[in-house]
Image (cartoon, rainbow, N blue to C red; front, side, top):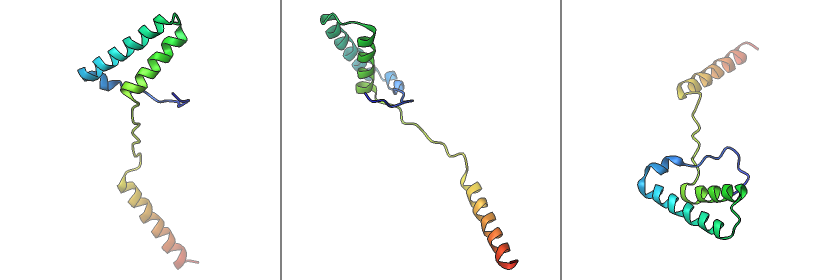
Length: 91
């Protein structure tokens, strides 16, 4: 549990029945321990949810989409070469 911002749990994994059941059992066990300690507070509940989510589900990998295509990069490089050639021929 760190101070990582914008980390989302990989809830898509819950579509898998095995992962869903593992998450449910782990959460149930942790909450029952919390009830036994008579410390079932909102902070305790949130902590249990976070720990279970991190342990069973993990975090989503963020996808970085390229917003400039390879074709655009090649045209940028082509333009740079043309400008460079113009500067060397016309001082």
